[in-house]
Structure formats: structure tokens, C-alpha cells
Length: 77
Image 1 (cartoon, helix red, strand yellow):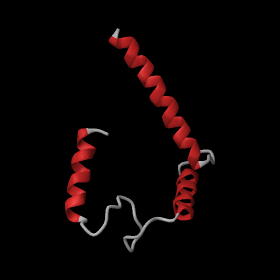
Image 2 (tube, one colour):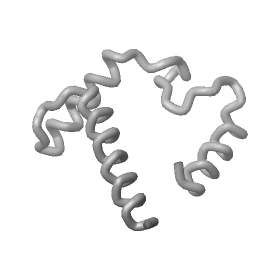
Image 3 (tube, helix red, strand yellow):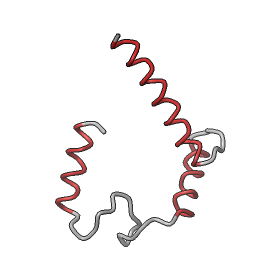
Image 4 (cartoon, helix red, strand yellow):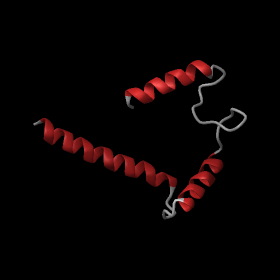
């Protein structure tokens, strides 16, 4: 996580003392997985992107992270 994001989250925490949630519903409660998936699919559709599984994001992130670490090791040598 970058320094800017850390600062944003620390400021957010100061103003939201009633819970530790970063993402919540309109009532400040936990998001239901069905709600997240619904909005995810709607966003993909609006952006004209293919319908992928939410879990695919995790796989893509892991693959990109491994690739970046390989390049970092090469550049460090």
C-alpha cells in the first residue's frame, strides 16, 4: 500500500470511529457478497468489459505481483 493510501485510511479512521469498515452499505453495515457481485457485474457491463468472475481479479493480481517481483529481482542484481 502506498503512503498516500495509508494517509487517507488513517484520516478516514479518525472520522469513522463507530466501526472499522472501509466499505459498507448505506446504513454502515457489512456489505453482502451478493450486493458486491451485483455492482461488479453492472460495472463490467457499463465499461463494455467481458463478464469475469470476481475471483479472477485475485488471480490476476497474484500473477502481476509475481511478475513484478521477478523484474525487481532482475533489476536488483
